[in-house]
Picture 1 (cartoon, rainbow, N blue to C red):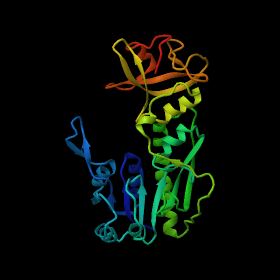
Picture 2 (tube, rainbow, N blue to C red):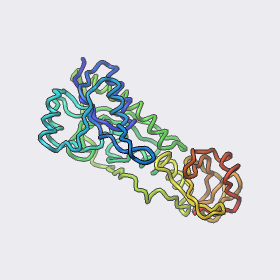
Picture 3 (cartoon, rainbow, N blue to C red):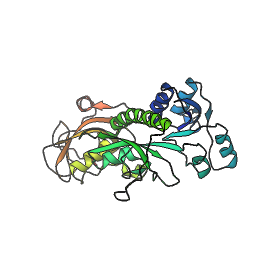
Length: 311
């Protein structure tokens, strides 16, 4: 049965779910997203969000309120007469008036196996912590932060060298499929919700820029997880000197390697770097203002020599 849906999302992570909902024949009567933001080198051009652009392609009316906490916003939302709202990385808090408006509630697609990694950065935090598994869940929203009961879940393995970017891409596609299956069950009246466990709660706090500098005194496993958890954005970084003073370099891809030495020292020309315990190999790097480069290509340009110290 087709449902009348309000879709709420902002980044490219949200777009496959919107497309799948439309593809399954549901009527998306409105798309809510963050307002266009300055972009470009000078920040003079306002750029719509990926959801905004996708909704316009589908001919769906787009709404970009700065807040949903006013009576005017609540009245506008209720006027859509949607039976369910689907929320995927929207970016604004939904107050009680919005949560109560759709007859079948507001369903959120969350990128973790709740109650682990509630909050803003569940994909990055799972990888940074070395989790071997994560998943996506369809949750009925409450006023608490990702505390609502769960209706459906899909588990996803995290390979040892997988980056947060790769997990993001896998998760957005798996999540889109999960949400349309949840909507199908909801339309049949067969979507059962179960309360989250009160044990094992962790919070995926927003990534802070201060976290991005690599600490080579940590174990190789911890540094490896840190780098891949921040790849490709915002990117973990170190500094080294190519003869013109310290230059910041992003490490985008690594793998664990044999070896030991003083933390941060290059053990050979193949970019094995010693850590506090063990070593890793740098596989992909990025200089400021340049694109990502494989290690071999990087070494043909701004070379990190055997014995160089990375800070």
